[in-house]
Image 1 (tube, rainbow, N blue to C red):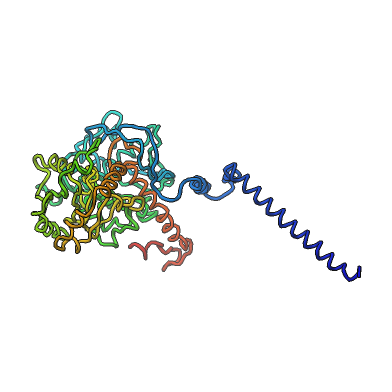
Image 2 (image 1 turned 45 degrees about the horizontal axis):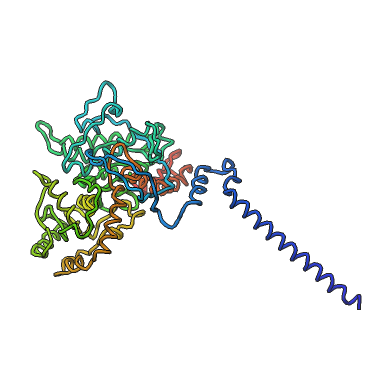
Length: 495
């Protein structure tokens, strides 16, 4: 019997050892995970031994942060910021803060001659200086409607001032002077201002100053080593006015454009994958310390502007005839002339909802005037692209209506009247939380429009790098038509 049971006893012994080994292994693994969690884990990794250690450090920093959404509510100290170059607006304690893990963008800026930028503002350089000394003088930007497309001015000022100390840590971009270290190459051409001020041909010239500057810009950029290195794909060009860069855009289209919308661009020149949509600078006054509420805004629905527009703007005149007789609705022609801006400010500040209707292009400054007024925007523009929509949910503070529905008799007014006080108040509160994302100011502040644009550009950088790297896969091989020549890896993609 003993001999017959011996193999069974051996099997039991081996099974016991195997179970003990498994239990010991699991205990070791759980103990190690506990140690990693309690000490932060990442400190045990020597990133210097890994490729692209900066990338790994960014990933480690993001692991410990909230991931459920890109914008979170955070308590920050009260402070004041300069708004519209006139008043100081107190910031509340609870504001929305986006992109807590933002990467500071490294930007190489061409030292273009002053004729491309601040000379367009009537600034006169001293000696060989290309840029104004911001410690002694900040050139003024012209007011009125010129301001709405002034993105180029604010971004350039922000880059020039990046050499100053930044105690707040708000900065999202810094200027570097070695282009090989840069994430993007910035082209400081004030294209919107050039169009607004210098589009007319002045005798005896045969071409406008705006057209001549565009021709000079194309010659300059295409001659630069930085442009040749990437065929312009990592270049950042501002063309916020829909008619700016009208002649040069077909030669410069591989670059990242900063635009108001895509209304006057074919998709092979500008598109949402490649380019950045930036907000207009609102021209009406910010509603400071707004405690108006639902009942304190007597006008239900507000629109004042050009009613008869071409292209997609036909809907304005159709809506005018549908709404002009409705009670508590203000729908009238208006312009910035005379006291137009002040009238629009008062009208929006006293209205619950503000219409943003497509005009000659899908977007207009009216949306950002409404946001600054805390007047809930009603957007009727099927082709509109919105700034920062990858991190902001506009449905939380805007009403979207399809054009085909808006043109149905009584549809729009019934929809607006169906929105009660509680729902409207929720959207109104949200407007006050996000309004600072659309404020342009100098110096730039944490989470304002300037910083949000830089962060939007930063989110494009990895895709640009991927395209550049993939294009170079076979660049070492001599497959050219002539001995010793190389195939241009960009030829099939861009030219």
